Each structure stands twice: as structure tokens, then as C-alpha cells.
Length: 223
Image (tube, rainbow, N blue to C red; front, side, top):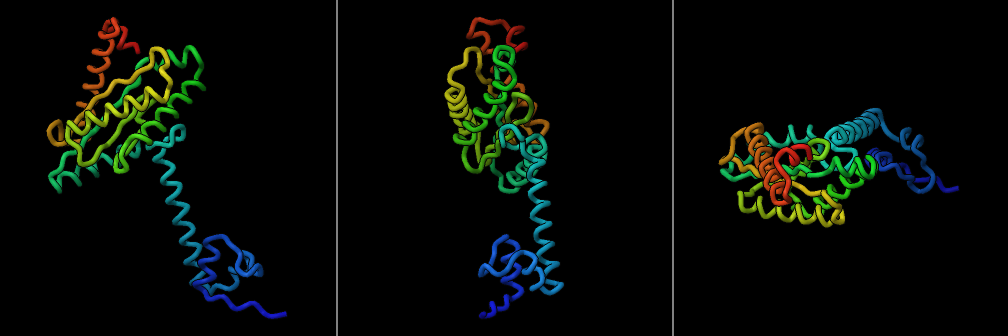
């Protein structure tokens, strides 16, 4: 029987890392034996680092929608502010607060509410630009970081996202979304300032939409 060629340490390491068999004669244990101590340590270290990066990424993702979560926002927003400050460019922060979402849970159950959130999250991903950061900030609140965007760009993006979300949920009665926009540096220079301005605009949008539907501020606050 012809002997299989001896694998180089680099080739064995690559095969082990990829989790494949070479020439149908080498299992994972055999590949480990082919590696010198330093090569094996390097492979195991690379695997550990990949696992740690994956786990770290999971801590910044919302398990329901797959979007970023509040931890990602807390990391990304200061970074983006600093980056845009260096280049003298505007950064837009958009806040979306769903209207009437409690009614969906009350009428159809929390499983249906979760599905609505997933559909809206997917609609946002399809509509947002590749450079935008999408975050589910709280129960029915979303936040979008739009790099290199002034107010006009942000308002247009919010309009597209609103339309996409309404289309995704199929016009569920009483369900809508209020939007607020803040732009660095005009509306604030810190994450707290920008989020406060965007939240205030979203609340005012909620009140305005409530009045247009013939509802008072008290009712819209309850929504």
C-alpha cells in the first residue's frame, strides 16, 4: 500500500482548522499527531480566538431579531461620534418607537408580537444601507446609526424604513411607528445628548400621529 504523503505543519494546521479530511486517510486526531508542539499550540490558539470572537459577537446581538442590541449601541455610538469628529462629517441617529404594539400582544399573544418584531427587523435590514448600524434598543424600540448623513438624508431614510415596516406587518390595525432624528454635531456631541434629542422627536411624532388619528396625547402616551 502506498504511504500517504507526510503533511507539512502548515497544511495540517489548515486542514485541522477547517475540520476536513485530507486524502481520506487523516482524521482530526491523526492531523494533531502530524503537528509539532508549536504548530498545535498555534492551531488551538486560533480556534480559541475564533470561539471567543463569536461569543463576543453574540453578546452584541438581539436573539429575537438578529439586529444589534443595546450593548452594541453603547460601543458603536461613541466610536462613530469620534470617527465623524475627526473627519468633520455629520452622523445621524434615528430612533423608532412602535405605536400600538401592546395591542398586538393583547389581541394575538406574545408569540405574534415576537413575529412582528422579527418581520420589522428584517424589513429594516433590507431597507437600510450597508454602512448603517441597526439596533433593537428595547422591547419595541429600534435605533439606527447612519454614518455620513445629515438631517435631510436621515429623514429620507426614516421615511423608507417606516414604509418598509408598514409593508412588512401587512397593515395590522393600530400598529405604526414614530420616528425621531438627531444629527451630530448640530443636535449634540455625546451619545446621551443625541439619543435624548432623537427620543424627544419620536415622542413628538407619536403625539402628532395620535392627533391625526383623532386621539389625545394621553392615549398616545399609553400606546
